[in-house]
Image (cartoon, rainbow, N blue to C red; front, side):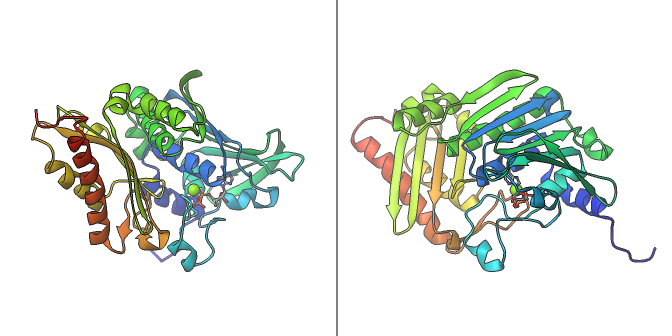
Length: 342
Ligand code: ADP
Ligand code: MG
């Protein structure tokens, strides 16, 4: 076969393989876009576990009519313009791939209105060349992305979809994790027309704890030690609770770096090491921890899903977290709030 450039739809479908594993990954990407757009209210509507419909509506800044079609193009982003921007990135997105990828494996429509515009516009793309069509629409300031019939044109992926219940459980988990880190944002999640989660905007400490309790359980909040540990521009905050069975081990081990949910070996190892020195073998930690640091000191462009990061100074970060967690566990023991020895 002669060398040829793949048509845009096929190129996007291949790229989609990396970020769009299942409906929950679509939800993650779209909610992150809403957060980057400065929304403080986000509604997530799901039908049939996301297989037939995923609709995310926000009250963020919106997209101007002239840029609507561009938003669906691959490598189109408003979040970076040069490599230096990437080094100090604080937005959740930057690759300019999500909308292009998702629209290549679904029927995607993007409806949006900015504060400056009197009317809203809707765009969708079709076919191998991903031709875009734009029509007038009705929508308040903000954006709605509707993703219908996910994987309708990629049967191999569609085959891997599990039951509606399982797929929805993954979506619920994504929303819970995001809602934990973004307590000031209001979220509503519905499934087949029924409200499943409703998190009101939480600003004060008591409201925030109420949200943590709704997501992580009353027990967690009752038992948890608050962590607030700082050194130079490193800041570790959140909660850690010790339970007497190993059940919670993988269920509630959430860590966030600069507001981004990650699975990081350095962070997890530091927490586990600190816990290992203070806990007996039957006990295990449950935690929700936020590490904030200068974005220059961490590389978030390691994997398309951005679940992994790389630290400039991994050892320093490790020791900082280890000390923060050890300190919290030690002072709790000294104050005799909790006796972890029995
Ligand atoms: P990225 O988030 O990496 O920039 P995406 O493909 O997810 O790439 O989105 C492309 C662009 O479309 C974004 O950079 C942003 O300008 C715009 N966009 C997407 N979703 C929204 C939204 N909900 N509100 C406002 N703008 C959006
Ligand atoms: Mg994005």
